[in-house]
Length: 571
Image (cartoon, rainbow, N blue to C red; front, side, top):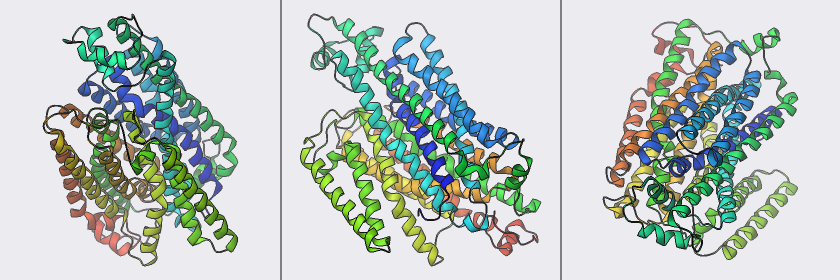
């Protein structure tokens, strides 16, 4: 997995890890921030959340076009600084801007800067990773490289919810408050004058830090200010993470100098753009194949990114804020990191060819076992006060821990020439996503027709595992697929197209949020499962055409194009 990879991969992956850590720190609390700061309900906050995600993933199309004409590296650096200013605006909105509509408009400005910066940074950095593998001797490592790159993204996002929670707790502790998921909505209703009976709010206020002699109105205003400040601290963390990313990228430039291209280096630009020329028919068939894949990807991201929308609402309103048994240690991110280290050590133990390597791996496994025993023995049972955003650390943990398993399975199949094609993996991923939401449906039956309850956290924890299986089949392989199949002169635009499809899917995230509270929760999960199954059926129905259009075999490509084409080496 890690052998013979160029140093540039690790530098670019680490730079991306820092940026993603900041982004997911913000995203873990974004929906909750909108509801606490502005008093928005699920429908409005869901629309803003989905709209932001849509713009974030649309902008790489523009960023890709700019990079194709300018410079991938310069776009990446510019994107870092634009995002930095956007997060800075966000961190200022949270605690300090109050009254009228000013904070919302300032917030939108910050979100737009983050979106523009992401457009310049995200897709173009991934194109640079792909360009590290354009040479024939590295081409075979492309899929494993993108899996490593994707794993690095998730290392950053795994620790993000912990940091967001820690920053919120800092603000709450300073004010003498504790977190309760019901308080922000009730406080905002009291401030707006729409709370008919304040009895329940009074009970919660007294249990969560209301000072003696403090009026309920004063408590409500102060609680909203403090919790907004805590979320603002989380946005500030994103600023620091971007400084880290810039330093890694800038100081590590020698490691990926071969893909640093701009107009001042025409020779390098020409080298980066060269490769086997495709016939017009081949170019057309590949673009069409990518567009068909993008169509399916739209619906995957619609269902997958419910993690920050309906699944967060489910964690807030329908899930017990406490966990018991073995799964309780999962709410300690350091325990999750320890498990991930153990997985890699176990693989190293079987793959090491020297006794020294096996001895080191065995020692790490022993240390992991001791660490897990420590976490299990000294973690309170039950763990209480679980906040909704903490569930979002499970998906990236699963990605990090299961990536070597995924690579081992597909490597085994590849050696026997039985590895599924990238389009086929995407179809399997959609089926697995349907299974995930079918599982959520079962867990939601006990809620009846309501949206409030206290189901076991294990329903969400298991659902995130199933969604991770789907993600590992689709996302890293999909990015590699685009990088490999896109015509050489359209790489930036096609990678941007992947993100546009993701953008459309992310905007569709808002539809289940609109339905939240209007239909039974279990019915909502059925709708998402059906969408996944229909998407899977579509991609399997055109599988032969997709595989032919992107095949290395000229005879298959000829059949797909409907005309004779020259034999070409896969880019």
